[in-house]
Image (cartoon, rainbow, N blue to C red; front, side, top):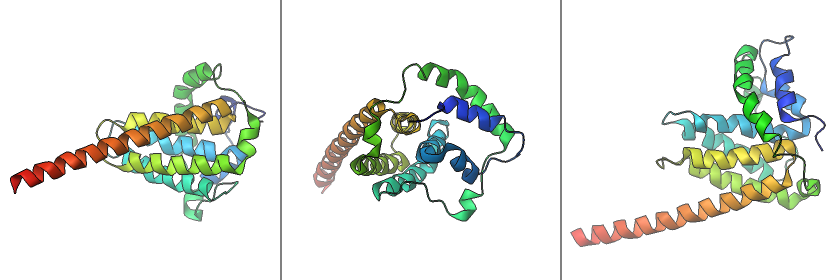
Length: 201
């Protein structure tokens, strides 16, 4: 189980005056076994930025992380150039300042629960599959869905960070429901489109 909460670890990074840039490699070292959670949190953030390409940025990053979980990696692998990249500490500190009140409220609801769930290989595989599917959907230009998919991914990130098995199961259920709903809706739209095209011929 984690010994320190997510907010405490984020604050320690933001207040670390020994480095001007927080590389992803350094962040992974600080978060240790919760590396997938923190990188998933970082990857999800663009989905909440009100720009048209927010999902196109977040989606592939989430798929990349989900694929690693699917294939059973215990730690995150990053190409060297990406691992050596990272935000400036002062910019990261501003982000943490904005997020801190929200994380403070969530700490009362999210906590380590059902810890054995995170030790089972099927947990990683199922989470990986659902992250790949949700990330792929997020990358598609589906109007008005960025916040929906982003919210599910945020739940995954916080569950992995805090080792909260209850939240992880909720994220699984939400991801399956949304993926099935989008699939059914897409099927109906394709059927209507086919009928419309046939009516023109």
